[in-house]
Image (cartoon, rainbow, N blue to C red):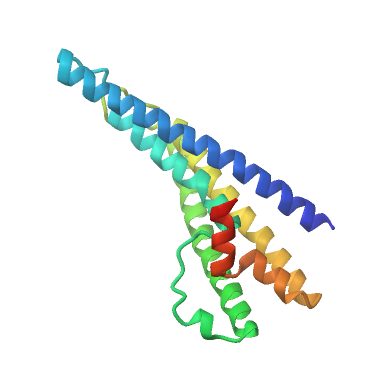
Length: 188
Protein backbone atom coordinates (compact mmCIF):
# COMPACT_ATOMS: atom_id res chain seq x y z
CA UNK A 1 0.00 0.00 0.00
CA UNK A 2 1.19 3.53 -0.78
CA UNK A 3 0.74 4.81 2.78
CA UNK A 4 2.89 1.99 4.17
CA UNK A 5 5.69 2.73 1.66
CA UNK A 6 5.53 6.44 2.51
CA UNK A 7 5.50 5.65 6.22
CA UNK A 8 8.56 3.39 5.88
CA UNK A 9 10.39 6.03 3.84
CA UNK A 10 9.56 8.69 6.43
CA UNK A 11 10.73 6.37 9.22
CA UNK A 12 14.06 5.83 7.44
CA UNK A 13 14.44 9.57 6.82
CA UNK A 14 13.69 10.26 10.48
CA UNK A 15 16.57 7.97 11.48
CA UNK A 16 18.93 9.85 9.18
CA UNK A 17 17.75 13.22 10.51
CA UNK A 18 18.15 12.17 14.13
CA UNK A 19 21.75 11.15 13.38
CA UNK A 20 22.38 14.51 11.74
CA UNK A 21 20.87 16.23 14.78
CA UNK A 22 23.07 14.16 17.07
CA UNK A 23 26.14 15.07 15.04
CA UNK A 24 25.22 18.76 15.33
CA UNK A 25 24.99 18.41 19.11
CA UNK A 26 28.35 16.66 19.27
CA UNK A 27 29.96 19.36 17.12
CA UNK A 28 28.44 22.02 19.36
CA UNK A 29 29.78 20.24 22.45
CA UNK A 30 33.27 20.05 20.95
CA UNK A 31 33.12 23.71 19.94
CA UNK A 32 32.03 24.84 23.41
CA UNK A 33 34.68 22.61 25.02
CA UNK A 34 37.38 24.09 22.78
CA UNK A 35 36.13 27.59 23.59
CA UNK A 36 36.28 26.93 27.36
CA UNK A 37 39.76 25.36 27.17
CA UNK A 38 41.13 28.16 24.98
CA UNK A 39 39.80 30.79 27.38
CA UNK A 40 41.06 28.95 30.48
CA UNK A 41 44.56 28.13 29.29
CA UNK A 42 45.36 30.71 26.63
CA UNK A 43 43.05 33.62 27.40
CA UNK A 44 41.66 33.67 23.86
CA UNK A 45 38.24 33.11 22.42
CA UNK A 46 37.23 31.74 19.06
CA UNK A 47 33.95 33.65 19.42
CA UNK A 48 30.46 32.61 18.50
CA UNK A 49 30.50 29.23 20.20
CA UNK A 50 27.40 30.08 22.23
CA UNK A 51 25.56 31.37 19.17
CA UNK A 52 26.46 28.41 16.97
CA UNK A 53 25.65 25.87 19.69
CA UNK A 54 22.26 27.51 20.19
CA UNK A 55 21.51 27.16 16.49
CA UNK A 56 22.70 23.54 16.55
CA UNK A 57 20.46 22.77 19.52
CA UNK A 58 17.39 24.30 17.87
CA UNK A 59 17.94 22.48 14.59
CA UNK A 60 18.82 19.16 16.26
CA UNK A 61 15.68 19.33 18.37
CA UNK A 62 13.30 19.65 15.43
CA UNK A 63 15.21 17.05 13.43
CA UNK A 64 14.55 14.57 16.25
CA UNK A 65 10.80 15.20 16.62
CA UNK A 66 9.68 12.77 13.89
CA UNK A 67 12.03 10.03 15.11
CA UNK A 68 10.61 10.36 18.61
CA UNK A 69 7.12 10.14 17.13
CA UNK A 70 7.93 6.94 15.23
CA UNK A 71 9.54 5.47 18.35
CA UNK A 72 6.54 6.53 20.46
CA UNK A 73 8.98 8.34 22.74
CA UNK A 74 7.16 11.63 23.26
CA UNK A 75 6.15 12.17 26.85
CA UNK A 76 2.56 11.26 27.67
CA UNK A 77 0.61 11.36 30.88
CA UNK A 78 -0.55 7.76 30.87
CA UNK A 79 -1.45 7.03 34.50
CA UNK A 80 -4.98 5.93 33.58
CA UNK A 81 -4.15 4.69 30.10
CA UNK A 82 -3.22 1.17 31.25
CA UNK A 83 -6.59 0.79 32.96
CA UNK A 84 -8.60 1.57 29.82
CA UNK A 85 -10.02 -1.04 27.45
CA UNK A 86 -8.28 -1.30 24.06
CA UNK A 87 -10.92 0.77 22.23
CA UNK A 88 -10.60 3.65 24.69
CA UNK A 89 -6.79 3.42 24.55
CA UNK A 90 -6.87 3.71 20.78
CA UNK A 91 -9.34 6.60 20.93
CA UNK A 92 -7.06 8.38 23.42
CA UNK A 93 -4.03 7.72 21.19
CA UNK A 94 -5.79 9.05 18.08
CA UNK A 95 -7.03 12.14 19.95
CA UNK A 96 -3.56 12.69 21.41
CA UNK A 97 -1.95 12.41 17.98
CA UNK A 98 -4.50 14.80 16.47
CA UNK A 99 -3.79 17.33 19.24
CA UNK A 100 -0.03 16.90 18.79
CA UNK A 101 -0.43 17.44 15.04
CA UNK A 102 -2.53 20.53 15.72
CA UNK A 103 0.30 21.91 17.83
CA UNK A 104 2.87 20.91 15.17
CA UNK A 105 0.74 22.60 12.52
CA UNK A 106 0.58 25.85 14.48
CA UNK A 107 4.31 25.70 15.24
CA UNK A 108 5.11 24.94 11.59
CA UNK A 109 2.93 27.77 10.35
CA UNK A 110 4.54 30.18 12.82
CA UNK A 111 8.02 28.96 11.88
CA UNK A 112 7.20 29.35 8.18
CA UNK A 113 6.04 32.91 8.82
CA UNK A 114 9.22 33.64 10.79
CA UNK A 115 11.50 32.27 8.06
CA UNK A 116 9.57 34.16 5.36
CA UNK A 117 9.96 37.36 7.37
CA UNK A 118 13.68 36.65 7.89
CA UNK A 119 14.20 36.11 4.16
CA UNK A 120 12.11 39.15 3.22
CA UNK A 121 14.14 41.45 5.48
CA UNK A 122 17.54 39.73 5.22
CA UNK A 123 17.65 39.49 9.02
CA UNK A 124 20.95 38.80 10.74
CA UNK A 125 21.85 38.00 14.31
CA UNK A 126 22.72 40.94 16.56
CA UNK A 127 26.02 39.31 17.52
CA UNK A 128 29.50 40.10 16.18
CA UNK A 129 29.10 37.13 13.78
CA UNK A 130 26.09 38.81 12.10
CA UNK A 131 24.83 35.36 11.05
CA UNK A 132 22.12 35.46 8.38
CA UNK A 133 19.26 34.03 10.44
CA UNK A 134 17.84 32.09 7.51
CA UNK A 135 20.82 29.70 7.72
CA UNK A 136 19.76 28.10 11.02
CA UNK A 137 16.05 28.85 10.59
CA UNK A 138 15.52 26.95 7.33
CA UNK A 139 16.69 23.53 8.62
CA UNK A 140 14.79 24.27 11.86
CA UNK A 141 11.64 24.89 9.80
CA UNK A 142 12.24 21.75 7.72
CA UNK A 143 12.39 19.73 10.95
CA UNK A 144 8.99 21.11 11.99
CA UNK A 145 7.49 20.42 8.56
CA UNK A 146 8.85 16.87 8.44
CA UNK A 147 7.46 16.24 11.93
CA UNK A 148 4.04 17.39 10.75
CA UNK A 149 4.14 15.24 7.58
CA UNK A 150 5.38 12.18 9.50
CA UNK A 151 2.61 12.63 12.06
CA UNK A 152 -0.02 12.91 9.33
CA UNK A 153 1.29 9.73 7.72
CA UNK A 154 1.14 7.94 11.07
CA UNK A 155 -2.40 9.17 11.69
CA UNK A 156 -3.58 8.04 8.24
CA UNK A 157 -1.89 4.65 8.64
CA UNK A 158 -3.39 4.15 12.11
CA UNK A 159 -6.89 5.11 10.98
CA UNK A 160 -6.52 2.78 7.98
CA UNK A 161 -5.52 -0.09 10.26
CA UNK A 162 -8.44 0.65 12.57
CA UNK A 163 -10.80 0.66 9.57
CA UNK A 164 -9.45 -2.77 8.60
CA UNK A 165 -10.00 -4.04 12.15
CA UNK A 166 -6.28 -4.23 12.99
CA UNK A 167 -6.40 -2.69 16.46
CA UNK A 168 -3.07 -4.22 17.48
CA UNK A 169 -1.38 -2.77 14.37
CA UNK A 170 -2.80 0.69 15.06
CA UNK A 171 -1.66 0.43 18.67
CA UNK A 172 1.88 -0.48 17.54
CA UNK A 173 1.91 2.69 15.43
CA UNK A 174 0.51 5.29 17.82
CA UNK A 175 -0.19 3.68 21.20
CA UNK A 176 1.84 3.92 24.36
CA UNK A 177 4.69 1.41 24.42
CA UNK A 178 4.08 -1.48 26.76
CA UNK A 179 6.66 -2.37 29.38
CA UNK A 180 7.65 -5.44 27.36
CA UNK A 181 8.16 -3.29 24.24
CA UNK A 182 10.33 -0.89 26.21
CA UNK A 183 12.41 -3.76 27.60
CA UNK A 184 12.71 -5.28 24.13
CA UNK A 185 13.93 -1.92 22.77
CA UNK A 186 16.52 -1.68 25.53
CA UNK A 187 17.83 -5.16 24.82
CA UNK A 188 18.12 -4.69 21.06
